Amino acid sequence: MKVAVLGFGTVGVGVWDMLEKAPGLERGLVLVRAGKENEDFKVSSMEAICNDESIDAVAEVMGGVEPAFSYVSMALKAKKHVVTSNKALVAAKGVELNKLAIENGVSFLFSAACGGAVPFLHNLSIATLDDEIESLGGILNGTTNFMLDSMQSEGMDYAEALSIAQKLGYAEADPTADVSGMDALRKIMLACAVAYDKLPVDGFSREGIESITAADVNDFQAMGLTARLVTSGGEAGDSVYAYVEPVLFSAGAAECSVLKNFNMAKYFGKNSGSIVYIGQGAGRYPTASAVIRDLYCIGGVPMFTDKVHEVVADNSACVHGYYVRCEAKDAASFDFEESRVDGENVRGIVKPIAVTAMHEKAKAIRDNGGKIFFAAMEK
Ligand SMILES: NC(=O)c1ccc[n+]([C@@H]2O[C@H](COP(=O)([O-])OP(=O)(O)OC[C@H]3O[C@@H](n4cnc5c(N)ncnc54)[C@H](OP(=O)(O)O)[C@@H]3O)[C@@H](O)[C@H]2O)c1
Image (cartoon, rainbow, N blue to C red):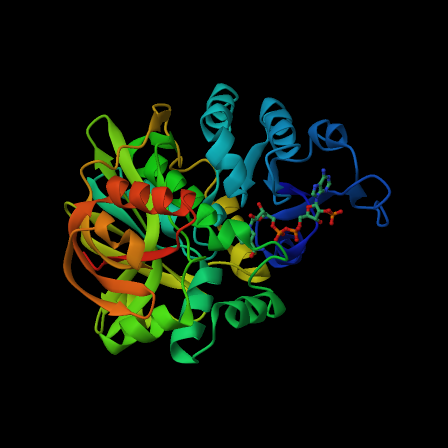
């Protein structure tokens, strides 16, 4: 099978390198920007790839929604199989692209878009054939895991942890998608669509780690707790629940052993019980390895079926206790089980409350200029 690669950056170079030695796979062309065709295998025209009948599959590793969406659509219409690492593309346009793939009798796979090297979506799509997925999610963002682990195990403050994550190449120059929880949210969107044929496109609750301080870490560490940014998903009637928020785990929880920039993806199957995968969620070769794996899975079990459709997430039935740190003036917003005054702040555990209500309260406090950090207590 001859493969064209769209984009020659971190992942693209990794895919190109691995293609050289992958049995049964062959290097085709690489799409680069105009003016960057400095080797004979590089082209800047998508038409050149679509019109090349020797090319069977396209690996899209450019990122972003456009022009990736146009190029992937062109490739599918030209009856080329498509694999992609681009979660933004699949979250925004996955249903449409899947339809095009089915119409043209080709595969559309995106294992690398959720969990990097961790074979989560691949195995989830197979598990749906003989199992009911009761819940799914986990730690799906390595950058924030690195930052939280560094703050806890090495006593760094937020700015230092972020700066080191950037120096090590774990965080982008603009880290917003990671620290805001958006990257993790896109991944749980894809996982829900694979598991339930329902791609949630609205109605989420999303809290990242931007509000956490070294004082928060000191406080919950004194209680024997460890923070992780966790995605949660599952079926909710005709819809799904899908949310991202920091969660505090007690010692012994599997999440506490996920260190540095590792990911932990998991699902609970009615038949299989708990299945957990831990591994590298990003990086050149870990991500490229998932792209190559998808190429070998072409023609097999699809990730999205012909039933996949968009829904509005419904988190109304999800309820947790929460750790909350807020200013004293805002403390009356919460029904604390236990609390204490810490300088100008109040810290404590609030009684179980709906995820949507907790996120809305935090938003209202911030809209009024207040400051708050919250994290769900381990479920
Ligand atoms: N890096 C990871 O560890 C990782 C992990 C999982 C998933 N992903 C996903 O994989 C995708 C690629 O990530 P990456 O880290 O490899 O990004 P990257 O290093 O920025 O590489 C993207 C490449 O695509 C090229 N490109 C962008 N627009 C183009 C266009 N219109 N025409 C031709 N080339 C174009 C860029 O060229 P220029 O340099 O000329 O702009 C660059 O070479 C993203 O969707 C990302 O979310 C990445």
